Image (cartoon, rainbow, N blue to C red; front, side, top):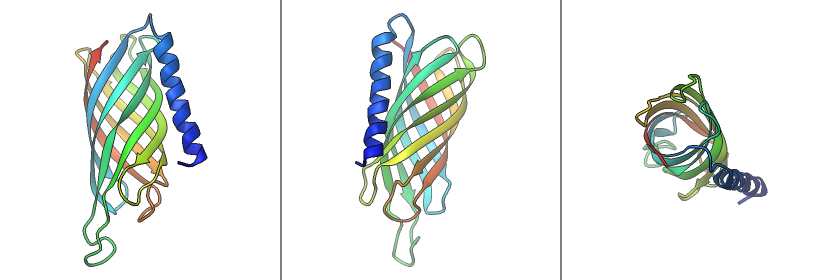
Length: 176
């Protein structure tokens, strides 16, 4: 891992630890989600992933999400020429951010932004900077539907240097 990635991963871990120890009076949630995405580069066919999100409620309208999971970009056949396929790119996202609900109830429409690292786990992949703005709707029952852009800087040693996706996330959250 390069120095910037180590610093970023340490910062995400520090934020998670800080909110775990200081969120005693607040409500916390654990969400499990499925992500289906359309890559923003023609090197990949589609993206599929799953994640776990721990959400610390600072107030009814503001939360701090910490997210990790696994995502795979499926490479296209013959991308580099006949018989030369684009390999899949799999990564483990580790990110933290801010989620703001537009309704005072703490459910309904929201906007969210997260940053972190994408730890490449397939051959030829490496760790890259990960950023993800999103909008969505969260029901009081725990169901959450969101649309996000997820961009990764310098995540591969092959093909496009920067990759991204526009993804739909369907999730269910549990109060802890």
